[in-house]
Length: 208
Image: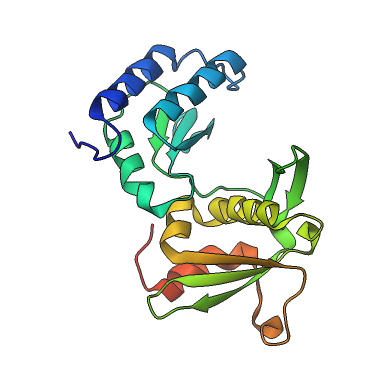
């Protein structure tokens, strides 16, 4: 059993014992709002992590304990998942997973507005640094009415859906969201749908 330097093993065990007591009570469509609220409180007791639930890849449901976009916290979430207790119908992940989707999603802005975003038409350019990390420049004309924080939030949601959170954190160090590309990058742009194979090829690593 692995132990964590930041999150106590006792807290991790307590979390999973709570989860297996309740994992069959979230509802077939994960609609038990009271229990979802309690899950949020339980995750916060572990640390500055976030979480998400949804349909599983091989089982009915999945639970993600996410490092909240902080690459330094990936080891923490790996330890939490390594100490998980199995529950029928559930699979667990230590970072948000790539999605099989149409690149459309909703998110809540900093002012509380719920917006629908269609990232299927977004384009991107990758700029590589000497250390192998990338800046991604995203052309997202539909986001230009938003402030910078909301643009970044929407871009991170899209990138996590396309790449998965772990690959995004391991490869992308800076995200710029623009209404139009400048003349230098205009002819180098690609559609967001092709980002995952592109960045894996450029990184030269065997990412799964």
